[in-house]
Image (cartoon, rainbow, N blue to C red; front, side, top):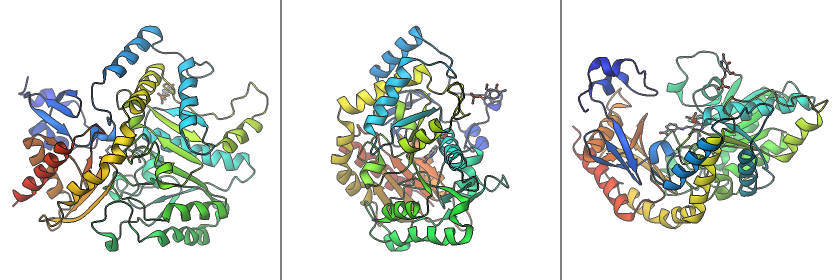
Length: 439
Ligand code: PXG
Ligand code: PLP
């Protein structure tokens, strides 16, 4: 079926979508394989964002299908509170071994939003357990994205995601690091490390005795791919240590290969106290997130736990560590390792940077940023309509057989880790052509 009636489309309130626009001209995806989506008209569309930064290993991987089917037939669900199943422990050990430093305890969630809530709840509870109950404020960063829950929209820094909701959680924000000095930079920009010093100003304003944690994406994804300035994350780490503030990295996009290392923490050489993951953890096949916590934090909860039958952290989700999600994650990590996909991203990212930065000089493209297999373009606005031109570009690309992400005044690419050089050229050509067709 390719002609959907208004009635057929009416009931579903789509997330982060212009519902009225979509329902006038539905873009229905009915299948996917490798780096391609298939629409309801039988067209093959290049997946320029790996789903939603989720499917780096490509769609329809038989290894994941098999692992998930087997798990469903063996243990479809087991209660996650007070009881466990072996695969959740195996996956936790595996993630702990992959993670840098002593980030060796894993709390499971079902999404990046829940990971943001979990990490910041752990941070606040940690200080309360440690006799510092006033340390509650969470410092995020302008342009940060940490999901759609009350936590995420409070310490998140994308205005459009906040303005409808009023008072959220006690938060403040560092400035973003997207500087005019760094326009058209491939990789980490050389200027901007001093922006980390703003944490000193926020400490002067609020006092460290009131601040639980700083949460940042090591590379900001949703806001349009903003790699960290050289030295910025190091300085943030130093200042967090100086003031006894926990540092949380939200690696929901950067973990598991996107930036050419297993974690952004490794790629950028800074180890946080808590590290959030989701998306690529299961290659997108089953919803799952994982919050990696350093030993000293976990141990503090165990030490303060009271009698051993007590629950040390009254927090969790019905589906935390879901057996089918664990199976998908194990298979997905196997694929990354067996196919050497993270090294592939690292090796091919200079070629990708060359291709994407080739769009410099294209009309309306006022900035291009890139790192690993991620890139963001800033598009000059129609007067008073910041979102329209990126939307028009993305729709033209879709018609040409290319899915790219648009949001705010940006276009984003997050190529599948299996993307070929010709596909990089093709998606960039489609972007250039689409921009050329604008009024
Ligand atoms: N943190 C970060 C850093 C994210 O990128 C979340 C948390 C929330 O995850 P969930 O699973 O609750 O959606 C995200 C999600 C885009 C795009 O196009 C990015 C996300 C989601 C959808 C689209 O940039 N990031
Ligand atoms: N709402 C109600 C009424 C519930 O019973 C539960 C879980 O038991 C939840 C919300 C939370 O659901 P989840 O654990 O899937 O986040």
